[in-house]
Length: 93
Image 1 (tube, rainbow, N blue to C red):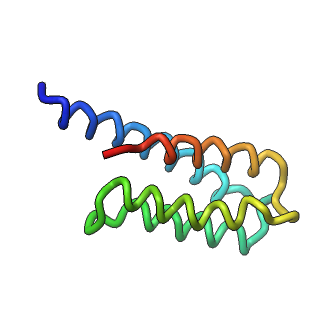
Image 2 (cartoon, rainbow, N blue to C red; image 1 turned 60 degrees about the vertical axis):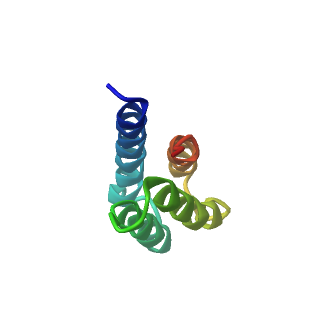
């Protein structure tokens, strides 16, 4: 298998793992509404197939970095968010 296909599969796995983490935050009733909205928007951004996977990850990270500083975010959501951002940061083309 070519290295490009392997890299694509690894990136898809990282994207899926990050999406699961973000979905946990979006589904939590404890997470404030404004934070849930930004997290959901970043998940939509990650699914935009018109952009490359690296660009989608970078755009989502940009959105999530802003919300990670919100003092109203519950600690479990912050840790989960950091985990998702870490996965997204490791996506390379």
